[in-house]
Image 1 (cartoon, rainbow, N blue to C red):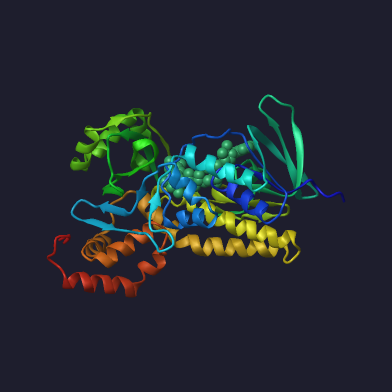
Image 2 (cartoon, rainbow, N blue to C red):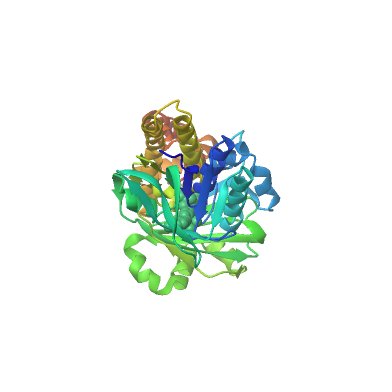
Length: 412
Ligand SMILES: Cc1cc2nc3c(=O)[nH]c(=O)nc-3n(C[C@H](O)[C@H](O)[C@H](O)COP(=O)(O)OP(=O)(O)OC[C@H]3O[C@@H](n4cnc5c(N)ncnc54)[C@H](O)[C@@H]3O)c2cc1C
């Protein structure tokens, strides 16, 4: 058998693909990354990166570059439920703040870092199909813009090609724990809407909104509603967006004094896990695990998976472990880490008012700074919901809040 020219071909060059390619190249492997987009390029996605995602950028030596783009740091998250607000700082020692960089900024930075690491980057290259030989993926077929179809071969093809992954369509991985779309959300950007380092969310029955600062002095404001309203509300997105803002009058007043700078974009998305590997292929990012964006986990999940998959492939290329073993361990780690957040995200994504006992708990959380900080850390993916909502911790929160009942955050 002839040795293929690449160890890995990575399809997709955004949050999952470029870091996977970069990390493999830094370990000395020959990598081609292709994307049908040319960078800088926007995509339909808001872009809050919580502290664990920021920590990954720091580990990779890329955080200073992000900071240099002028993207403002976010140190406080505030969840306004109407009668009470949970406010805290989710930061860690390793990454004390979050950032909300535009995807035009973030993805370009990641593509450039991959190229600097020695990855061959082919932008404007569309993969038409994967090459399958005796049940094993051995390469991809695709074309440059307007060019003829060419075939490229590698030991492994990594599908980092997002929600509509061509690689996943070809290899048909097992899909599990699916959930249907749960809400529909639309966002746009405003100038003259200062956030002073805050992420703010306003949660109401069947709808809600969130806002945070990004590059170029702009603030992103996203409004969403439960999925049953999708068909009706998409007829007039602007009106429904502003009606939702009206649920938070003080915030709506701030938006009223600001200027909308871009069009509304948004959508509704499915939820699933997929087996992320098989003979000659692997999946990272949305291609292998997708969830509603209400908890803004996608970018840091993609970063985490990029590290794990690059490690697993490195072990298998070096002959230290079989690909099946190494990527199987990655799948187990991914699922164990993600499952509690997946369920928490799905609950929030329905946009239904929390049941009374949950409202009572959220009210209690709002009355104690430690629990408030704990909640913001859950949302940020720093602490697992399984740990925070464990019966013992819930009891502790209720007891502490009971002792301080009557304070300013009291829900009753
Ligand atoms: C409305 C919305 C809001 C969101 N908000 C947040 C947020 O605030 N924070 C957060 O962390 N996450 C958020 N997410 C999730 C986040 O966008 C994704 O999880 C993240 O982009 C996944 O990265 P990825 O690299 O796997 O896929 P993508 O970012 O989708 O990148 C896939 C790439 O593959 C390329 N590609 C696809 N097919 C081919 C092909 N055939 N040939 C060549 N190239 C191909 C595409 O051009 C694309 O560049 C949001 C998502 C949505 C939809």
